[in-house]
Image 1 (cartoon, rainbow, N blue to C red):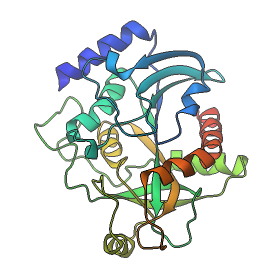
Image 2 (tube, rainbow, N blue to C red):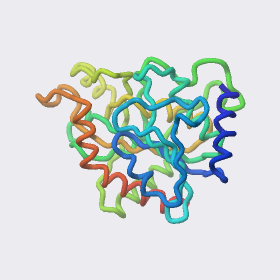
Image 3 (cartoon, rainbow, N blue to C red):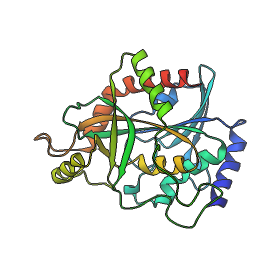
Image 4 (tube, rainbow, N blue to C red):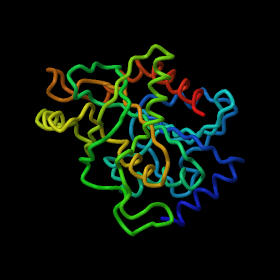
Length: 271
């Protein structure tokens, strides 16, 4: 793994003349944030050695380097998921590369199902914790002391100061947000109504199939994490409607402008 990560970093050094401290993983339908950056360098994932390729709808599969009001950012236009057949090591690979390349602040975004009955499509939740129900941990395997200790603490996986900054940025843009817990299933099937009832009993606010592997690895590497979850639909069994992937993409298309505006404010106010 170390050799693969170093190979990817060596390639990026030939494409990007600096090492940005801030990075963002853009979930379904949020690629327009990267398009809005200035002085862009766009690198398709297939050009980066060993980088896994996105196959999920709404994920472009490009790494974009650019600037927002002078602030340098690396943006992942799309991610890979465990449900695509990738190993946890593959899912975590981009975060390993970002960390080795110099990233120390990572923003993660996703589309989710609302578990809390007060949530509505388009609502934004700032994550303050998660429950990993994916059946695997991205840190499993040989010890990698060059990256992280064997048993990293996850008490503050989502950085409190960055989460506070996210709330202030939302207030500046008149965007209502709340804090919450992300419950991660492996997918690709949507959850059953019984699983959603279980998730609610365990304290979940939203549910999805991503984010946790990246957050765990980033936190273990000492990268500060902030995560935004955009509710695309009520979770299974909360309405009479059947769930579909197209519904998620359609709702994200409606609300992406709001979350992109929040991201832009967040990065502008980051010190």
